[in-house]
Amino acid sequence: MLATLGALVGSLVSYLIAARRFSGKIETTEARDLWAESASIRRWSERRIEALEQRVVALEKENTELRAGIA
Image 1 (spheres, rainbow, N blue to C red):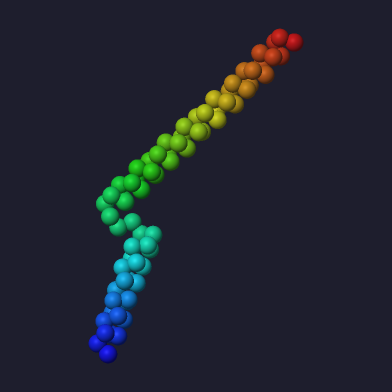
Image 2: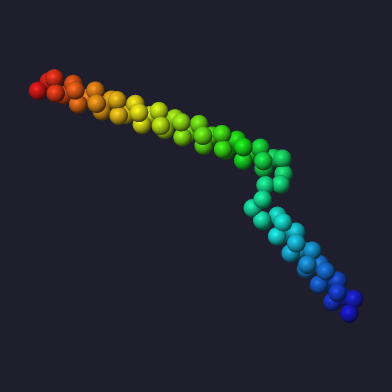
């Protein structure tokens, strides 16, 4: 009886620990720091992509105008 109760309590504790660990929540300082850093990198990347897209549009327009001048 005592062994069965011990196994049951042990299983319950293991489940609760695993549920907390794999819940997807950010609990540790290190995880929070990494999440903040990755968010910062994503924002920087989005701004850089937008700037490069604008540059591509400008260069395509310039290229079209230069080709028109050659013909």
